Image (tube, rainbow, N blue to C red; front, side):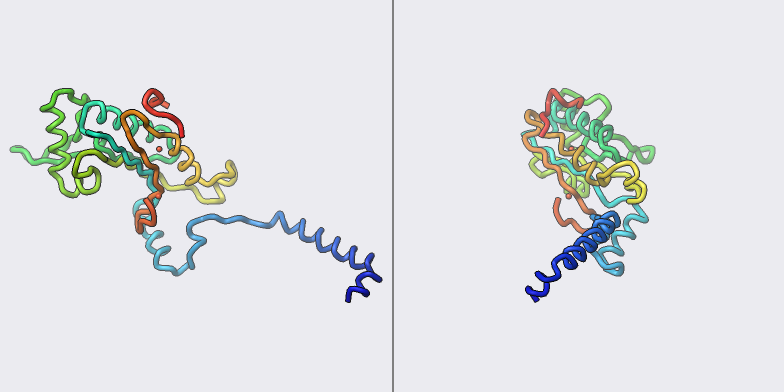
Length: 224
């Protein structure tokens, strides 16, 4: 075989050249797909549940920031949590709704019926009585306390719900980066070094948590 190739090396070389040309033409048709859906069969229960969730809520991706500090119910902590919540909503491209200690409705019964108000008022109090009332409200609802605040009052979540991402055929016309990657890059900019001893960015998948999936704050935060 080797002798034959050597004797007809011009023909073999030409043949390889033709194959390479055809290969280069086909390169333009290569499509790289990194969608979550591509990892599952079309009838996979996980994918079916994900699609069902999307049909109801619009998106299954959230940005979650874990804030850790000695006392998250102090005036300084609550003020910065509110600022960070507002900044996240303004800076993330697909931000829809922010849920945090300072941006959460609280329902309580009154003599006249039902009152709905924010746990933290528009003007965050500086006195011990007002701050204690906010803390009492946060812990008075078990479903809220278990999901949003640690039992020792040193950690809390800021959760950003994202709007539905456009289809691949839409965003690829204007960008070479997927929407979820854009939000991840934008969110990683925040790392507090003074108030927030620790802020972690997670990619959160709601149906099944695989892993807990962040410049107004420049005076309090440093870029990663």
